Amino acid sequence: MTNPMFDLTGRTAVVTGAKRGIGLAIAEALAAAGADIIGVSATLEPVGSLVQQRVEAVGGKFTAHQVDFADRDAVLDLAAELATETIDILVNNAGTIERTPAAEHPLDMWDRVLTVNLDSQFVLSQAVGRSMLARGSGKIIFTASLLSFQGGINVPGYTASKSAIAGLTKALANEWASQGVNVNAIAPGYIATDNTRALQDDPERSSAILDRIPAGRWGKATDLAGVAVFLSSPASDYVSGITLPVDGGWLGR
Image 1: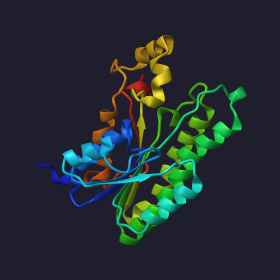
Image 2 (image 1 turned 135 degrees about the vertical axis):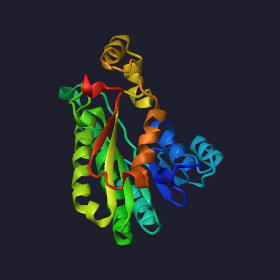
Image 3 (image 1 turned 90 degrees about the vertical axis):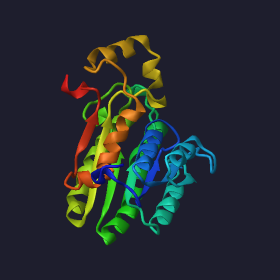
Image 4 (image 1 turned 180 degrees about the vertical axis):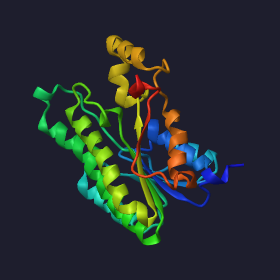
């Protein structure tokens, strides 16, 4: 039986970037805690996706939306549709990364990363947040990054966007906490996903990363699942405006 403090039965959660990696793990965990899931991804299959199978296997209902977060109009359309529904939890997880030295970083890469990682997050949070404020309850969770705290190498757009996400988390929390809407962020450490494939495949960088992580391993997408359930649940009702690292001890080193 689910602990009542972490019980999400009857809640509806939107998880962006739900097709794979961190989004998939979070969607499955929220469903296992009782939530129904609206999954969103640029390439998410309308029916039969892996995330749908995982959600339904633990008893959740699943609805799919295929939306390119680099397309402002498509994101606005999604926001308008979600604003008409009762959304209890919004997990802003969709994101992208481009790795090019800052001096040569093309502006179209910069624009795409900021559009996907920051602009679309605000559009959805604003639309869904209005409905949450009208009801006096809701949970919004952003996926931040270690680069919300650090500068990174060869990822200027990604670092700028994730630093901004940490600030946006605090800004929304300051306005909305008193009205029953909790806004927080999770900052994954070095997680073995598609976004970190280039680092995993670089023996020198991978070794240097592992040498700094006190836990001695790359993170798994499932390492974020419990934190997402906590921040979605009544257990976190007095938690507001934080960016919580899940990094195997990286930032404490």
